[in-house]
Length: 56
Ligand SMILES: [Zn+2]
Image 1 (cartoon, helix red, strand yellow):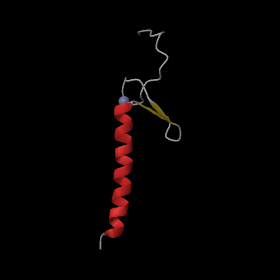
Image 2: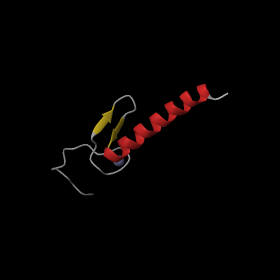
Image 3: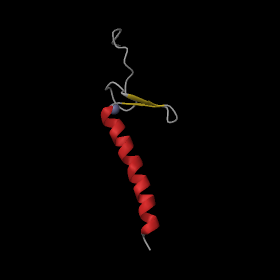
Image 4: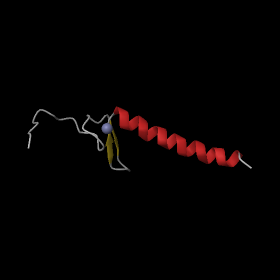
């Protein structure tokens, strides 16, 4: 076990990078990289839903 007493910054929930945001409803802390992935997935899902409206 390594003690990192100087590290006050919370870590990302998915990796060891320092978290830049906390998403409370999802109980996640995300670093820059994982946050952009999270946002991209969200946007993708929304776009797909919107896209489905215009299919047909
Ligand atoms: Zn991360």
